[in-house]
Picture 1: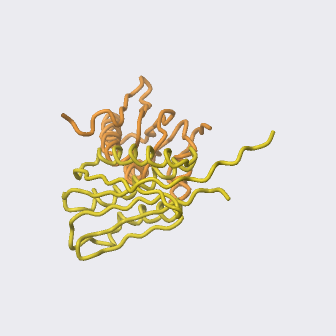
Picture 2 (picture 1 turned 45 degrees about the vertical axis):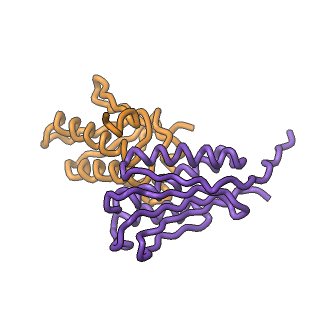
Picture 3 (picture 1 turned 60 degrees about the vertical axis):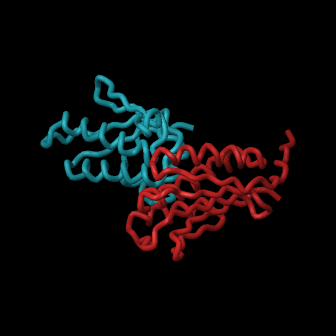
Length: 112
Length: 133
């Protein structure tokens, strides 16, 4: 049995947006990183397309999950693109503000 | 409309958890902590903070531990909710760069916290006082 099963699920829409459902924590972070890397591979090394995450169904993130997002954001920066976050909840915004990392991401939209 | 005051929290615990050093156990610790804190009368907003604190304690012990079992204590006293965790590791690196984010979050969310090295292993704790008179 996969001990990380069901903590986080990711799916990719036709436009490449990665929808995330669950907790971005120690268990979920690596799963999200893998999905982002897969999207990066699809974009190719020369593409400057943004990685877009839909966080509508994410209600918890910790510092471990944040490190996963920061890693992806830095890689996007190296490709001269961005990690764009949609439907970012207040609990995520709060963690980004606490850690001073809000400016590392493009926040396309927020939710209450 | 008159806002109802939240009742004071009641003492609960201590509750002891012995967890394998798996990342998925963070969720187990959070769920248990939420149950303990809800039983004591913490508000929904406070439960969210407690979730964060427990998760950060688990991050420090799982990611920086030696793959030994993790002991977590959850308790509500007159001082508030306290989570404390430890694992067997003599040479815990208190200054590991990856702990910086963890420290920042603990400092911002908790009323008080500590990341300490003892001869038996690291002890990481955080307390949240209820936000009421």
